[in-house]
Length: 300
Image: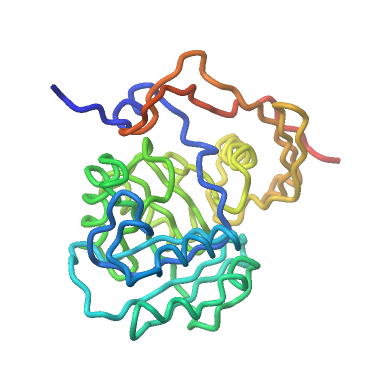
């Protein structure tokens, strides 16, 4: 019997990518080359107490903690590289440091990172490409994510590529997050991922595979993408958020745009009538959420 796979099922249904990025502003990536298990911070072979410490401090301070490794590597040397990122539009930043011992991660100020402040590491001027390959969490992430990571690693973008633990949205595998901007892409294969990496270098986004930017709520992500599609705006900062208001299932997001002034975009959150298994290991069926465009209005 063929095992169920959530990503092909999602593509067959035509699930909408827009407005599905996890809402995260602060990220911490810690190098851990070994097996991650199902729950990375709980199950990976980290020194005693490190995983629990990072999980608790990450929740407390609003930091998404991910484990990371270079594509194809399976062993470490005792030390670890780490990255800290803050997604904040044009003010986004990325830092890195090398740890002599993984235990040294305990000394990081995650409260500062969660508040958008530097952890005192070295600034990184170029983007990081984080590809989810966490197969023990969801089979699709390995089956579809690993070819993406290996394809990027073999390209001119290889130095920027890291495999990571679960980023959210298993059914959209292969998933890639561009840091520090927090741009979530889904439904990628290796050629599409290279196109995303090329566009990133040019200060552009690829609308076909963009799920949203993680520093915005999901409804605002969907509104931004609807506006970008309608006006064919692909520059990284062609659409700049200026506020949002909610009225029941209606959300109005305001954006300042390049060449089109200030616009309000209204979207409505809708659930599918039928329910489906949304991850490979889901034990129940759920409706599929989406955001439908209601209207776009110029602000006078």
